Image (cartoon, helix red, strand yellow):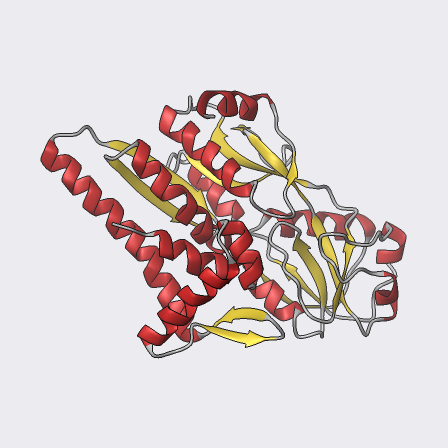
Length: 322
C-alpha cells in the first residue's frame, strides 16, 4: 500500500509553501505542483487557498488531510492482520505527538517503520505538551515526540535532536517593527527591556496546556507584565492564523514558524527548547522505540530552521541505526 502521496499533502499543509514542502520532501517543486493539481482535479475541489504565494487548507483540504491520516491507521491495521495470518510476532509502538506536527512527521516515519518491522502495531496519541507528558507517565505511550525542558519535565530521559526557540512576532505597522526582521530564520535581536515596553497592542498566546504557554506565563509573572491578551490557544496553527491578521503580537516556535505576510520577527529572551524524544526515566526503551526516535531526528534534519544539538543518548541512537 503506497502512502507516499499522503506525505505530500501533509508537507504542503505544514510548510504553507510548495517550494518549502518540495525541499522537505526532497522532490522537485513541479512534481509536487502536478500532484496537487491532479489531486484537486480528481476531487473536483481545491484543497488549498492561494494567497500571496501562501498555501492554507480549505475546509475540503482539512477534511482530506484528516482522512489521509486515518488511512495510515487503516494501513497499520491491515498489515497487522496479515502478520497475524502469517503467524508473525506482533511488535507494539505507542507514540505521543502534537496535532500540528504529528501528521507530517508520521508520514515520514511510518513507511520506514513498516519496512523494518512488518508486524508493527502502531498507536498514535495526539495531544498537546502537558497531555503528552501525562500519557507518558501513565504508561499510555512509550515515546513522545516533542520539546524538552529539563526544569519542567522531571522523571524524563531524552535523546536530544536539536534546538528550537520562541520567536516574538509583531505586525509591520507597530512602531517597534522597524527594528525587526521579515525573515523568521534570521530574526532581529530584542532585549527584555524593549519587550516590556510593548503594551499598546493585544497579544495572542499559547495556552497553559503547552510548555510554551507555561514558560511565557512564568516570565510574565516574574516581570509583573500583564499585556492585553485577546486569545489563547494550544494550537500553533491557530496562533499563526491569528498573527496573520496583522492585529496582534505573539510568540511562535521557530521550528513551526512559516513566513507570515506583514510580520516581523525578533529573537526571544525566553529559554530555548530542546527538540527531543521523551521516554520515562523508569522505562528501558525497546529497539523499535529507539528506532522511532532516530527516525524523528532524521525527519527534523530536513527542516531549514533546524539547529543541530545532540546529547550522548542521541549519539548512541545515531551509531546504532545509521
